[in-house]
Image 1 (cartoon, rainbow, N blue to C red):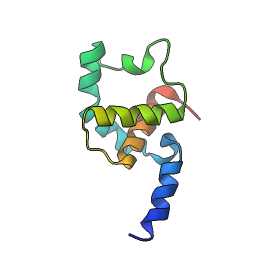
Image 2: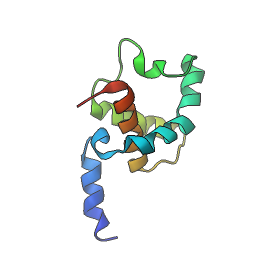
Image 3: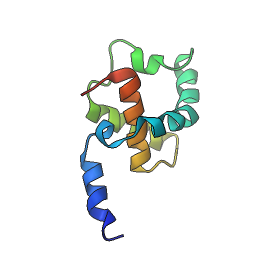
Amino acid sequence: MRNSIPLLCLLLSLPAHAAGDPKLGKPLHEKQCVACHVKLLGGDGSGMYTRKPRLINDAVALGQRVAACSSQVNAGWFPEDEANVAAWLNQTYYKFK
């Protein structure tokens, strides 16, 4: 445990898309996010990410939004899960550097 604390601090200090793995984020997104977004917006729910004007404009805001949604739906995600979902969303929709 002692050695994992500095690593955790490093991961939490990085932007969500830098620390996450999009391949791990996609199934989490499909399980926890899609149904809610379909309910809110209809269609396949992707309008949450493609609507104009875009409400999320940088990687930090994306990570914060994923964390807030995770909390709202009681997803039970760890910070690395949130980072993985943010990484998948960034890769798929946002393309932040």
